[in-house]
Length: 87
Image (cartoon, rainbow, N blue to C red; front, top):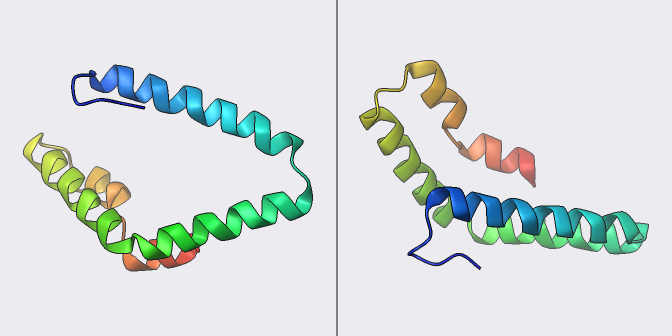
């Protein structure tokens, strides 16, 4: 798990490693288990909508401050419609 003292590169590498491990486990899972996992993920996305949008707003603010163009900001924006499409 990441800590506040890790660099962003270290955190991203750790997230990638965990995602690869999860991918290998899901590849072994049966259809029922995969469906249950997807249902749970959808529930978590719904339950954490406000947190996701708040974190996205932070990302948007940082992107604007860094001078990213409008097209980049648009792609980065997590709208309610985009969240609804996930679940």
